[in-house]
Length: 225
Image (tube, rainbow, N blue to C red):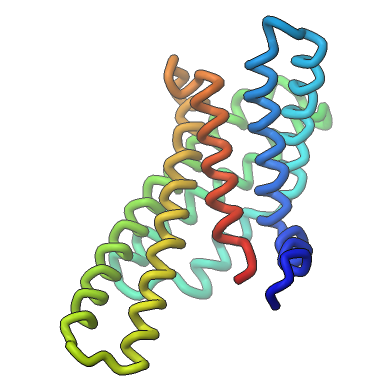
């Protein structure tokens, strides 16, 4: 399957695919709103509405997403004790994030008390940040292991076809893990802006760039090969 249209259809059929597209809309509109706010208030208002609508849409798409972490632990918690430990902590944080994000969405659209939004947002962001920290640590461990394995395979002067395939597989895995680290670090900045507001993390440019880095890294990881 080499046709780009086929790949795009498959990408957008995935929940993660459509989420990354709408996330791109959300953070592009955030940056445009910030850029034209002082010079063109009418355009700024329209892009602000697009940003808010995109954010709420993404929360709706993520309904039940907390079960993904549970299933990941049930199916493949990790090959070593340390990786299993990191997987439990990372997925637990992610499950808290997605579970309480449901209530944040309901509060934002007025189904439940709107005053709960700030509390739900804090709990959700806290769980999210905890998950990202442990996922990042796990990815760095796997990257280190991959480099060791690749060096070991490259010591052989005459490599077999099987060894060449293993090296290629390690390189692909490394690229995917680096994309995951980039996305998690970017999303960590966004979560910190909610948990502990500060001038750097809460600046519109920081949030906008972080959101786009996360979206495009996820786009790369989810694009059909």
